[in-house]
Image (cartoon, rainbow, N blue to C red; front, side, top):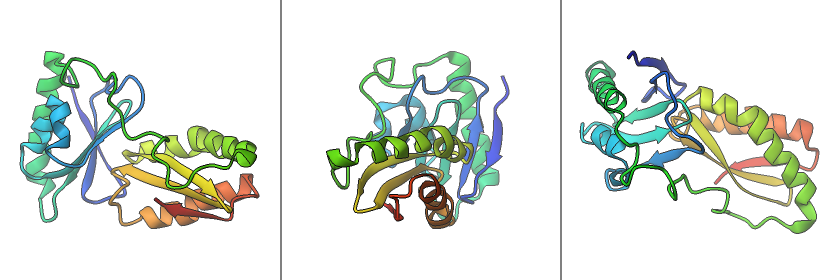
Amino acid sequence: MFIETETTPNPASLKFLPGQQVMPSGTREFTSPEAAEASPLAQAIFDTGEVTLVFFGGDFISVTAAPGVDWSALKPQVVSILLDHFISEAPLFAGGDASGISVPAEDTMVVEDDPENADVVAQIHELLETRIRPAVAGDGGDIAYRGFKDGIVYLTLQGACAGCPSSTATLKHGIEGLLKHYVPEVSEVRAA
């Protein structure tokens, strides 16, 4: 087995590609060793003591190093942990599967959607799923919808994208521009 790595726009994060499915559906973000207790793999990565975030995507794992940590020393440790996990076919989550465990989904809203905006919200969801989410996943992260009100779309960047220095530019220039182009009712995108 070979684990590929890719850089991400976030210099503190690397994307690891095991060449097989990681999450059967959805994503999962771990932002602390306590949260990682739900997954033996995430817990093992946090046990290096040099990690601040682990993110499971469909076919990748993003790992964010703590400030000041040198990736040249951490990368071989993470690759070794991932190889051990995937070669042994160990379960990803305690209890064997991911049932009932996921990133806080679209139900963690910042603002409640107005039923009168159902068509606009459907257009936003369609663009997020077909154009934005795949691009963000390519950078080792994900994006979650958190509401639409008064022309403002609220989104949360996750994984490698969460602490990325260019995340504000991604939201304001990339995502906002795309949503405004296809959905005239959108006037702004804000981080939630």
